[in-house]
Length: 426
Image 1 (cartoon, helix red, strand yellow):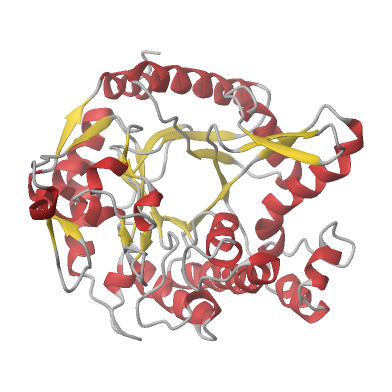
Image 2 (cartoon, rainbow, N blue to C red):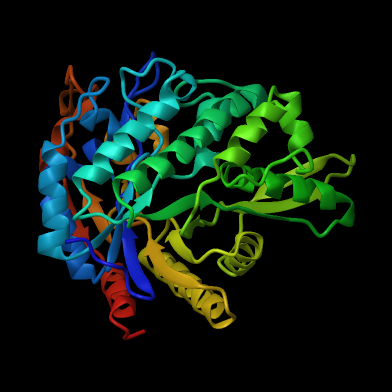
């Protein structure tokens, strides 16, 4: 049966980015496929128990469970969730949407039916698993979603520039709004944990104050939109209006604000940076933040939204020692925030085991070269000498690699370190 999280919960995540669509030069990106989680899911869930995790952020591959409009195949999810909840005893926070849409949805987020379709899927899921799942994330990191799909053109529908960004942003946020309503209709006890990649922008130059304020507003714009906070007095209204947003668009969001129960903050060493001026007076941005600056992010988010919070993702790519140091420092920041009166309700290291870097989609090197050392467990690939023979083709899922059947997890000392936190020894 579904459980309620403790007053402060220690958790882990399993990287669950799904971008299955391909085009010349772009490979499908399904983290469960590329890390063999579809094969190792029982063992992976057992690792959660070994690490002492009380919650796990775990995603549903929408494109696989909803293979055609109105058609759902829950067979794998049935088995996996039952084992996770009833055998392992870990409480899931379900990522309903982690970037990718179904293959049949032409033009992805700008498809006219997108918002209704994701709400339909969310309702079906919440209704089916109401005895197993209470905690839901309607859509992971809407800001990042709009950035990669609408401004950078790397993910479907491959739009570029600020026009593209806004064209993706609006339906993404409408989808979040309709999903929240669908979840509560299917399960009145649903707890909405809306997650965003919250960045910290700053400058020592007072002449760049407006730039910093504008950039910070962009980070929180999706959350402002689907909670009905954007009106014609909003700092970014001129920007939105210049890229096609109308007052009737704003009115829709003001009429359909979502109720968020917990704000999930994702924070990494790349989550923001400093603005300076060059010798020629031009504005320059240098990406990079410290663990200590997480304190400013938590304070800013709390003061703006007055919501309970969980640190829903954090990690650093590096050695075991570097990861352990980042864990210690970010745990200390979260604890201090809680002591200062910010209602922090949890800490989540992301991920449980090493993930595959997103550049895998854009490039053609062998899979093992994209494994990022961030997890409590390392991915161990069997790499053959003949890389051409090592790579095999699958008509259904696109490129995959022959060694996935032999990929294993290797425990690192970071797992013991996390366990000590989760069990109150640190």
